[in-house]
Image 1 (tube, rainbow, N blue to C red):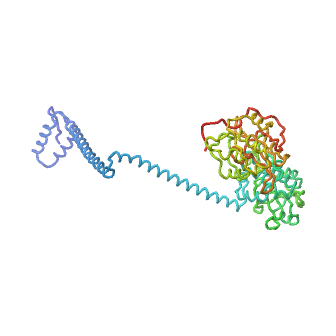
Image 2 (tube, rainbow, N blue to C red; image 1 turned 90 degrees about the horizontal axis):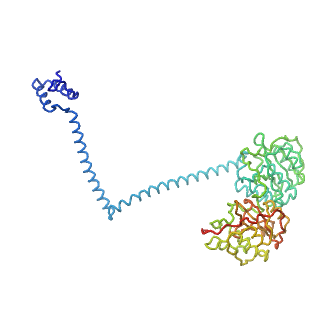
Image 3 (cartoon, one colour; image 1 turned 90 degrees about the vertical axis):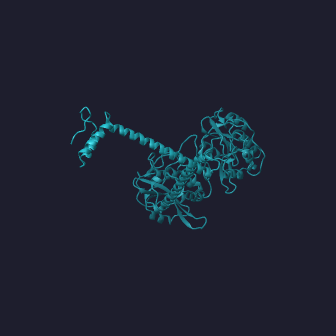
Length: 550
């Protein structure tokens, strides 16, 4: 096959064109056709690279055609879009373009609704699991790792109705940080209370401050036997029940439960007469958790009598003296916080059904107290309600706790017995933050440093109807003042201690607050408390601020 050459005789470099012409010349067309092809090629090509020039021109032509086509179609689409928008929205394209953020809002609304639906399903699932876990714990004996969690409310209510005094040993604040004791100390504290008056445990509140459980870790069976003054013996559940048949009604003892090797749990056992049905029954109070235990579902390994209650010893081999009772501190099983000492939060003689967040003094809580707390205060102290209760939370009428407490003290000292029975019109004066020194001068008493335990111990020796003031300090540099009242409950007749807050018109649970000081109201019969003087420059209340409450 002849090779295409230039006019100067050199071979042409167009490989593609050579291949094309070679393919054409291989056709059976004759010699004259081949010569014609070569002539036309020379006329077209000349001295230029014809294939490269042709490709460039072709690309430019295609690009121009594409731009023209795109421009025509874009204008057509834009025209149709305007017509459609004008038809749907008579106010024109601007009104239509304002639909863009509306569409974005709809998308965000759909996402929000999807998230809320997921949260609802999550809460439903968590509630289902919680109920299933409660049912599991009801049917099966709890593992000792679960003893650090708060028992269900219905179990707590059952215990409180049956043994209100034992509730104060440790049940009221079981599971709260800083207040969880082991079962050994709780059982010994409950035994001391029972031995003072076995029949009174289920009837009225006794000396709570002297019977609270002490702090400490796990104890041994030997220590428990010495503390109770009894010999621990090995015994099964059936043996204990058989022994109780011959014991008098009102007898008490202690059971040792062991559901896992190396560690045990101690609860009380009580033979009593049901006050409603009159039937003789046996209960198993757990003073540590504040619940009634079903000992038949646990592995009973030992028994100790409380001889002073009339319970006779049980004959049998001695229980291993080195068996641990309770959880060692720091094992992660819910007993890692021994009870604090000194100025701290300890339970009061009365307990609100659900303790709420501690209020930061008069630092000003912007929200009004819940209605049920207000109703409770109004029913207990209608005269003190008028000190600041009607205007608490209203703009321009919020006063500091210092002035509210002084106004309430004037009402009380006028006639302490009428505070809970008759309305006395006396409102607190407006004013800024005060000091402990000013408060002491206004009340005519010496403020002293005192912890909650010291105040409760002092109240044991005071007459019913005595009043005082307690200084609470939950953060450095600022304090809150509330009243303290030893009274007889008009419904139950039990002697109790309450902590009215005349500023917020609520009853405070001082057991979850840090008590740092005490001031008596001498005219009500409250004697002074011995102790070092409280810092006179400690601020009581908060400076007036512009931000309004409510």
